Length: 64
Image (tube, rainbow, N blue to C red; front, side, top):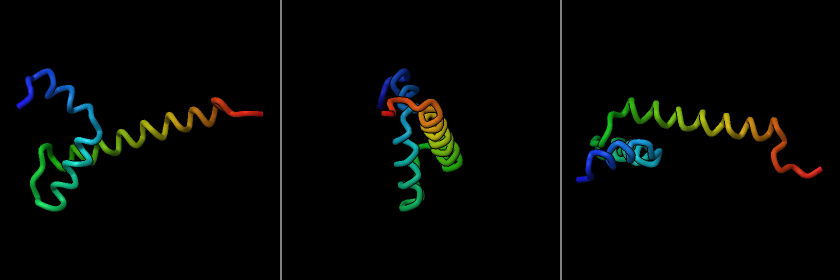
């Protein structure tokens, strides 16, 4: 129901892939493919872990 621009922008939301995975696990119906959901969730997880690793490595906002 969204215009094309907002449909493309909504695909950047990691919650979309989480909810789609849950919907598939319960009802075997999803908005996006299950493999795409798994890869996108893994990609977002890896991205967050890289950011956390970089913050720990740099000592960002750590008190001495």
